[in-house]
Image (cartoon, rainbow, N blue to C red):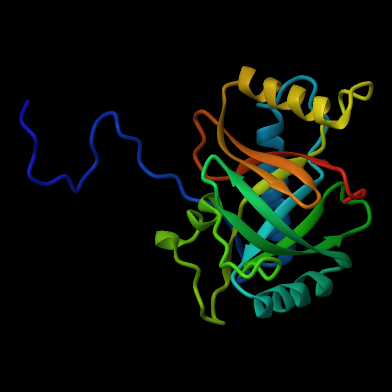
Length: 222
């Protein structure tokens, strides 16, 4: 076998990298939400028959300043801020931890909420946090530090496994994960957090890094 001295182009059998879906602040909020709806519909067609609906889409921003700035866009378009939460998360199989702050927005007659997430240092334990999955959504894994950033990754579409009402929370989650595996979704990362547990999955032929996130919550109704 001859090993090439340099590989700097497309190679048969090695997929091209996928890119994240982006929330673009240069577009109206309504246009971004319409894109989310289209992706939700496309993913729903791939989900197991027990799936009910996505109830959350996340927007990842690089700093608290961007949280406030994007919040102005959302409120100006009729979205209501209604809750905030902090979380310390352990990732598996990578063994890292990260701290994240969430701000939640909703709009009447829209069946899903928007979760604006900002990952930062682990103030709960004093360690700098890191999530491999989320880092990979930024160019070259580097979180931009400019206030001028206007395009933000959309990491996930999330749902609670309501389709198994007679099972315990953990059993509901396990059944939902088994159903995703049966539909050829690929596991990317599993997380344990202060509110419960969740994981990230991609269709095996995904064209974008937009993950499906089943979640269970043992802390409250979020």
